[in-house]
Length: 306
Image (tube, rainbow, N blue to C red):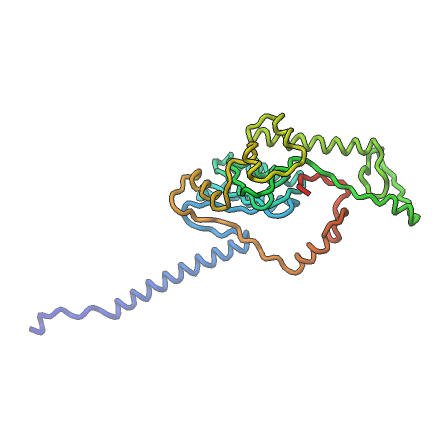
C-alpha cells in the first residue's frame, strides 16, 4: 500500500521558484524606480501610466518663458496626455515672454491637445494674454483678470544729478538712441518714439484677444483701457467661458480629452527655493528702478497689472 502512495511534492524546487519570482519582481521595481528617479532629476518630470491630464503652473511675474515653454512643448508630444490644464496666477510681465508662452499654448492646440486655463488670484495683462490662447478659460468669481494694456515705467534722476553736480555725457549714433535713460529728462521726440512702441504692442494684444475670443475688435478696445475685471465681470463680457475652481478646470479638461473616471494628473516637480533664491528675491525688489542682482534696462515693455 505504501508503494502506491504519491511521492511528496518537490518542496525545495517550489521554494526556489518563489524566491526567483520575488527576486525578478524586486529587480524590475528597482530598475523602474531608478529610471523614474533619473528622469525626475534630469527634467523634473515624473512619468505616469494611463490617460492623463497635464497640470502646468504659471505663477508670479512673467519674466523668463524658457522653462514653461519647454514643459508645454513636451506635453504636446506626449501621446498619453489627453489634455492640459494651465493654472495661471500671474499679474503679467514681459511682452515677449508672454507672447512666447502664448505661442506654446497654440502649439498644444495644433497638436489636438485641449487646453483649459484655471485662473487663480490673478490672471491679468500678460497672464491673460497667455490665457486667451487656450480652448476654455475658467475663472474664480473673484479672480482679477483682463487689464489689457501695456506699460513702460522709467525712473528719472535728472534733478538729483543736477543737485549733486553730476553731468551725464552721452555720445550716440542717433537722436533717439538712449531714449528712456534715467539720467536726463525726456524730450518730446523721445517720448513719441517710446509711445510708438507702446501703441504697437498694445495693438498686438488687442488683436490676439479679438481673434482668440471671437470678439469684435471694437468691443475689445472698449475693455482695453487697462482696467482689471473680476472673473464674474469677465464672464459677462466674454473674456472667460465659465466660473469655477481648479477642480472644475480639471473636470472640463477630462471631458474634452475623452477621459472617463478620475484622470491621472501629470505635473512637473518644482524645486524648493533655497537661501540664494530668497536673497535674490529680496535684493531684487524694484522700487521704480533696476534690481540689485539682475539689473534691467531702463526701457522695458510689459503687459502687467501693476
